[in-house]
Image 1 (cartoon, each protein chain N blue to C red):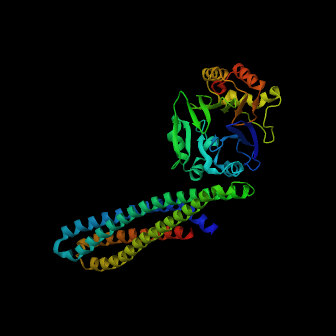
Image 2 (image 1 turned 120 degrees about the vertical axis):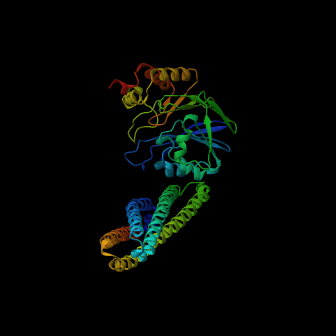
Image 3 (image 1 turned 30 degrees about the vertical axis):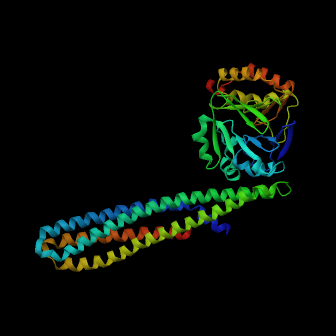
Length: 245
Length: 203
C-alpha cells in the first residue's frame, strides 16, 4: 500500500494510505487517512474488511496501535468502515466518531468495545493532544448522514466521497491535470450525489474554509488551485442523474 | 487443523439443514400422537374386550410427546449451533486478517503492538470452536435419544400386533390399521434421524 505524508506540522501530521496492490480486483480502491499527533492518532474512513490487513500493516510503520485512539467514519458504506469489527478487536479502547444516523447500522459490522460517539447533524469538534479537527456536515453528499473533516492548521479537508473518482489502480495520488481528471470524477458525482441543494450547501460551507488540500476517499487528491477548480466544476454539473432515467 | 476449523465453522448451514429435516419428524410424531388418540377412543368404545391395549396406547402418547419435545430441543440446539458456528467463522476471519497483517508488516517498527490483539483473536477462536464442539455433541446425543425411542417403538409395534390379533373381530381391523400407521410413522422418523446423523457425521 502506498503511503504519502500530506502534512507535517508542530503538533501533528497527515498520512494518506492508498493504492493497495493486493486489493482484490473487483473492490473499489480507497484512500485512508491518519492524523497523528505525538501521543494519539485518528484514522479517517479506515476502509473495508478486505483492506484491514494492509492498513494495519501500514500504520504500524508509524506508531504502535494503542496510539490510535480515534476512528472516524464519514458514513455507513462498507468501503468506509466494514473493517470496524476487526478494529474493535485491535483497538478496544478507541472511540468511533460517526454520524448519529448510522449508529444502529454501523454496529452490524461489530462494535463491542469501541465507544460510538454519535456526531450530531450540525457537526462537532474533536480535540486530541494538541490537535483540533472539525466534523463538517456533508449530508446527502452522498449518504443521508455524512460528514467531512476539516483541519484548520493543516488546511486539509477530508471530503469523503466528494471529489472521489473511479480511478485506475496506478493513477497518481495527486491530481496533475484537472481537465484530464474530470472524466474520472464526472459520472461518480452525477450518479452518486443525489441532491442539487445538498451540493450547493456543501460547496457554500467549504468555500468558507481555507482549504489547501481536498482529500477524497477514492481517487486523487486536489492541491492548491485545483481545490477551487474542483468546487467550481462541482457547482457547474447537475447531480442526481439516476432520477433522470 | 485448518481443515478442522473449516469443517466446524461452516456448520451453520448443516445445523439449519438438520433442523429443516427434523420438521418432518415433528409431523410424524404428531401422526403418532393422533393414532394414539384414535386407539384410546377405540379402547374406550370396545371396553373390557381390549383393555390390554390401554397401556400400549398410553405408551404411544408418551412416545409421541417425548419425540415432539426432543425435536423442540434439537431445534433450539441447531439454532445455537448455527449462531456459535457463525461466531467461530467470524473468529476465524479475524485470525486470518491478523495473520495477513503479520506477513505484511514484517519490517514495521511497531509490528509487535498488535500482537496481543492477534493472540486474543486466536484465543477467542479456540473458545468459539470448543463451544461449537459441545453444541454438536449435544445435538448428536439428542438425535441418539430419538433413535432409541424409535427402537422402543419397534417393540411396541410387535406387542400391539399380538394384542390386535386377540381382540374381537369387530375391532381387529381398526387396531391393525392403527398399528400399521404407528409403525409407518416410527419407520419414517428412524429414516429421517439416520439421514440427519449422516449429514452431521459428514461435517
